[in-house]
Every structure is written in structure tokens, then in C-alpha cells.
Image (cartoon, rainbow, N blue to C red; front, side):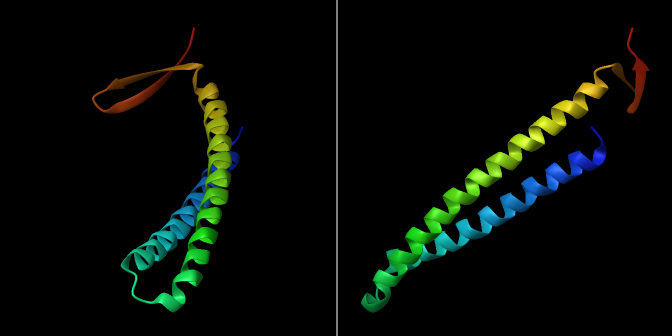
Length: 100
């Protein structure tokens, strides 16, 4: 396990998370427009957009959770390398000591 794999997993999760948040924001905007009402001609179109945005949020949430699982595995492997040492905090300085 190297740092590059850990960084790659973190970037994959961050990208998936940012995309899901952007689509969620769009869905909330459409929800607010539907709730406000007032334009009967566009209500059907907005309902279709709302349904499509909900489907995309669900799809992106699944991808985000997959990326999060990958990140958790990468962190566990990285942490496994650090289990060989004890961490001692003295005056705010961190010192790694070899384990016995």
C-alpha cells in the first residue's frame, strides 16, 4: 500500500461526494419550485425533472458509498503499516517507536 493508492481513493470519494451534493442541490431547487407552484404549464415538466434528479441522486449515492468503502479499505491497509509502531505524544511532538 502506498500513498498514491490512498490519495487516489480519497480523490475518488471526494469527486463522487461533490457530484452527489451538486445533484442534490438541483433536486432541492426543483422541489422548492414545485412547492411554490404558480406555473401550471411547467408543473409536469418539473415533476419529471424531480423524478430524474431523485434517480440520479440515488445512483450517485451508490457510487459514493462504493468509493467510501474503497477509501476505508485503503485506510485500513495504511493503518496496518503503522500498527508496528507505538505513538507517544510528548509536548505536542509525535515520536514513533518500533514495537517489541
